[in-house]
Amino acid sequence: MEHFLSVEDLRVHFKTADGIVKATDGLSYTLDRGQTLGIVGESGSGKSVSSSAIMGLHAGTTAQISGSVWFDGVDLLTLSQAEMRKLRGKEIAMIFQDPLSALHPYYSVGKQIAEAYRVHNSVTKKQARTKVIEMLELVGIPQPDRRFDGYPHEYSGGMRQRAMIAMALINDPSLVIADEPTTALDVTVQAQILDLLQNLQKEFNTAIIMITHDLGVIAEMADDALVMYAGRAVEYGPVSEVLTHPEMPYTWGLLSSVPDVTADTDARMVPIPGNPPSLLNQPPGCAFHPRCVHSSKVPGDLCRTTLPELLEGPRGGGHLTRCHLADPEQIYETQVIPEIAPMQAEER
Ligand SMILES: Nc1ncnc2c1ncn2[C@@H]1O[C@H](COP(=O)(O)OP(=O)(O)O)[C@@H](O)[C@H]1O
Ligand SMILES: [Mg+2]
Image (cartoon, rainbow, N blue to C red):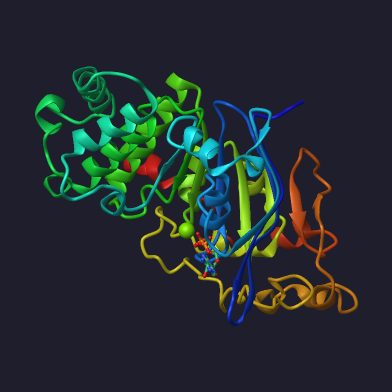
């Protein structure tokens, strides 16, 4: 079956004075309309770089990009910058963590959203204003006709993020890439924004790529989860599989570093010891091996010498893992890892 979005062997390498930074190195995934893919990983794992490549945002930089990004039957990586500009903001839209950096301080919020609409639609200013007010109302901004003329600094953080969502969705894009959209917000507002995105997704049948370092967000929002480490997918599959039967020790680490909201203290939160590797001159073998306490269970020097392939595990079901451990499930069972509660649900 042909997927709506199919990323195949995507590589984004940056030439720097110190060498080549392999920020994305052979990433593949698929996504269909109405579905959400959650991409999760520590800071610096290549989440933003890989998604910006889909948007064509590395044009004019030192980035060397290869692979394919099939979007509705077209390989986006073969399009010209002018062709990408036509798609960007119309068919594919992005929501960022920090709306203040995406909104210009000198123009009213409404004017900026209207501009985003007028770029892709031949309408009068008055028609655009009406459409924007409709959209502001849809994303839950009170008194939208009055708020239209407000400036970004007059909006609260949550309201700014709602305005960003209105701007991203005003042209009814079929794909939305949300890059840590709720990271800067407090938990209650975060839950409201995720709810809003889910409702709009249902209404417009949007495909969403949700980038986050928060497994609670993945548990709440995503159909599929893709765990990134050092520019590669290390675990990928249906979210119910990945979160309840994780097979990669890195994912176990992520799961145990989620604060247990049901516990009295956060004593059960165990961050993964060590740091992610430099993406310059990566060592051979599994990129996670220097931090992995289980590599001694693998015969020979395999974890240090050979990059594991991303393969379907014994449970099947399209659950892929990049790990040399023969039966990770069995080892995982002996780990003490708190169950992941979708924390947004707790807040409602
Ligand atoms: N223009 C660039 N030149 C060199 N390295 C870059 C560039 N942009 C990003 N990187 C590196 O790529 C890696 C992945 O970054 P990013 O995708 O932003 O991570 P995250 O998972 O936190 O979103 C980081 O190590 C970052 O330093
Ligand atoms: Mg990022």
